[in-house]
Image 1 (cartoon, rainbow, N blue to C red):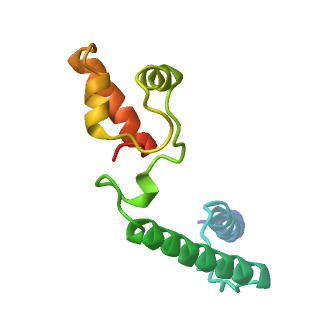
Image 2: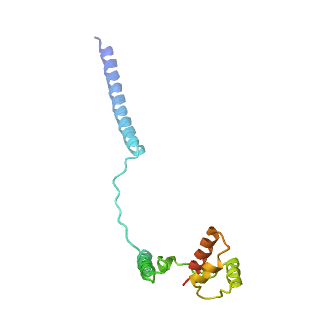
Image 3: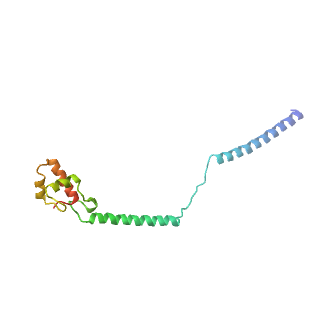
Length: 144
């Protein structure tokens, strides 16, 4: 080999080495950018602190739950009439106008109705009508 060729080979090797160093730097930069873009996230931990408002809401919820339990207990412990708890008793205790008129025609007025008088008054009614009248009177609390 001649001196000129050796000189060219060394320059070529030096340029190749410089290019390799630049490629390694670029590769390192690209790897770092890839890690950033890939979304690797450090583990995040946080503590939740209860605020004063949350504590107030929890206290109100507890109070409402207690009140609801008391209402339920009172509803089931009240007087039982006609086999139903007091909470299930109808609130309205009036008769339909047709039933009240039929009873008035037979001399049965307001207040408690005697079952014997009722049966006598309903002689002309069908079985279904008698059942309907008696159930209306029971719901109204007018049957003795």
